[in-house]
Image (cartoon, rainbow, N blue to C red; front, side):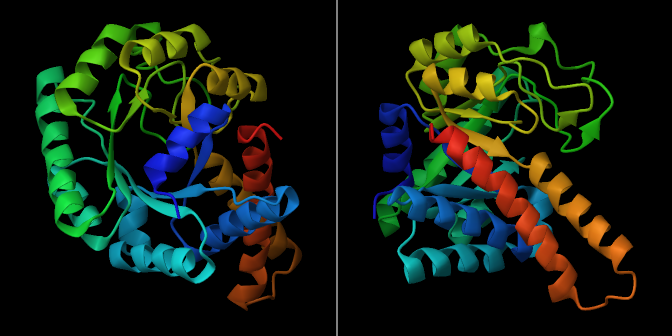
Length: 295
């Protein structure tokens, strides 16, 4: 099986993007994996996916537990499913995830001054290199540059902190990649975490193109929930290689569960009402994967 890095490079060459979907319970994992297998059968080709767990999600589902789940699925089914430590805020938390067997990690030090961000990020990169060389692994380290908010919620309006002024500057991206040695960069290009009721802001497609040309590094689009389909398509054309979806999954899961329980107030068997959440997640992920793979 190809490495995650090889799949990401291949996606860029094909003009498609790999879907990254967050979980905090096994039901969401089932929905995501079911969707990817379904699409794989339809196109007679395996569709790689990345499962993400933030620090909070990881704490709930279990660091070692989720690593074992993903490893078991990958080895049992020979399927390209990978695990990413999404938005980890310290070297210690990144180290614990990598030691547990994660395939990738995002060190999020965007709130720090640039040089401090670089120092912390480079420390994570160096540690990943040690593990890669010692154990023959292929760990990837990603970092964020530019502010896109931190909420994975449905919001009434765009956060005040997110504006044109917080977009990533291409020359800064180039400098950041050169100084840190990261494998992937997550810039601010009009994207925000969470979803806005009135509609998410449009992506700055030209900025994506400029960043890609400046640093020639795989680009990850965070805050994919709520973005217009045409923006996804154009962003992928200009260099986006991985796209994160989280809030859409959470909303679909919650809505399906709420509907079922309202209609069946006496049902107490979790495997019955949680199944509706799995099915709802599968629909969201299936549609996103089709779009990201230009299908």
